[in-house]
Amino acid sequence: MVSQTLGGRASRLQSTKLEGRGCAKLRVAQARKRRRRRRRRRRRRRRRRRRRRRRRRRRRRRRRRRRRRRRRRRRRRRRRRRRRRRRRRRRRRRRRRRRRRRRRRRRRRRRRRKEKKEGKKKKERNKERKRKKEIRKEKERKKEKHATVTAEA
Image 1 (cartoon, one colour):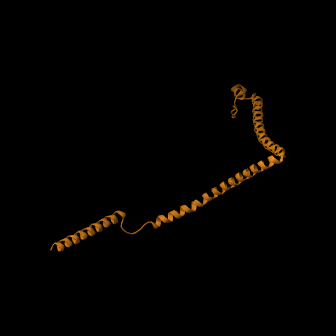
Image 2 (spheres, rainbow, N blue to C red):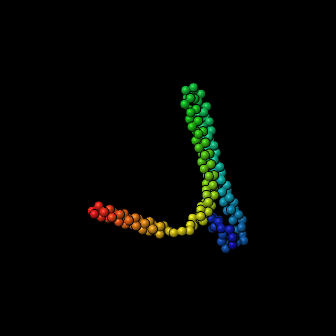
Image 3 (cartoon, rainbow, N blue to C red):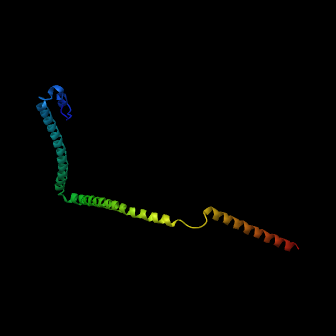
């Protein structure tokens, strides 16, 4: 058997009876397939030519702009189109800025090493602040009691 797998008519020709004599028939079927592939490629090229024709139509419109009134209005439109092209170039520059962000990631790694501080934790600090506040309030209460006792006497 021939190792190549073909679709359609060629696959029908691949049988045990046509092992020796069927080589020529398989070649004809392969040639038909190649012709079909070439036709498909030509169709793709025709599509590209149609796009070029659309560009030529724009040039014909420019030839019609010979009146003075229409020239003033359409020149402004041309300037707007040029500005849009410049904006597209700016978007490409923004993509280059993304490469700089990789350097910022390296800086973040260095900051993590510096964050390791020697000392008490937040919970312990808050507890100490509360204790100091309570001591101050008790001292103020004692002073008020002492003042009231001296006033009565």
